[in-house]
Length: 374
Image (tube, rainbow, N blue to C red; front, side, top):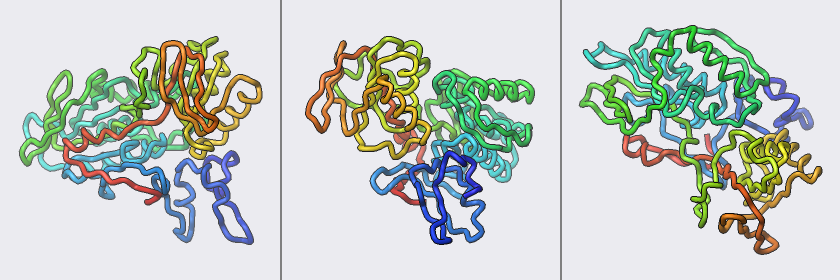
């Protein structure tokens, strides 16, 4: 229990009659420190729940997919926490480096797709191994972290970063973390290998010698490819009439822009609760709609923020509700009490991301759906 880096805020495990029991399993956010500390190897981390499956690419212990030479790390492989993603990016490149053979003229050792925590750590690891590589990112350094709302607190733990060493954060904002990474990028010289605002369009076999990676701007030949693209690039949509209106967005950037507006936030995870609480605290009139009957996947501090905003009259909570239609000045929902019509200026859909399954299938990677399994 003491091994959990989130203590004292989380109490997942507890002692009952001298034996360890799951006291609050929904508080677990997957650090894995408990598993590493357990002397009896009695703890197993799992993906998904009995009802909500999680699609995960099939990978070897060295992060190699079912396509030889093509590796996966970070959120796409199931490890979305920053610390875990940093570790996986480094470990994957260490494994790739061990597998490299004599270079072919005109061919890179590695193409890394994505510059989020896993991709950035992988880039630094490739630099430390003196590999010939490029990192392709369709947006900016940080990946999904770059897309977080302004001033969002990012919980991180001590992590080993290639070329830097061990770094420790407890609570830091998105802006401070990105500034720290940008400083590392400059000091290590890895910036010369980063390709921002460039989108990968295909990854194809180049005979038996490697891969051809085609992007919106160029074409690269590489012996190995590491996908660190995350799962949030394609947001999960509601598939309702009116969702294509300009007032509908899929991530919150600046809560202040919604001051005085009537805002509907849809979702039940941490991103939805953070968006709803932030907009409410900034002066927006917020309704939070979630199809479930409780926020079982959200961190306690986010649930507390929602409860506080509701008590203060800043937020209306609609559990077991579903959006049926979005119109220019209102939204229509269905709840246990029947149909509701709410005046509305903006809709923020925070229902998670969809695994880029079509892209993975084209590449040839097999994917499995895990329901509460390791």
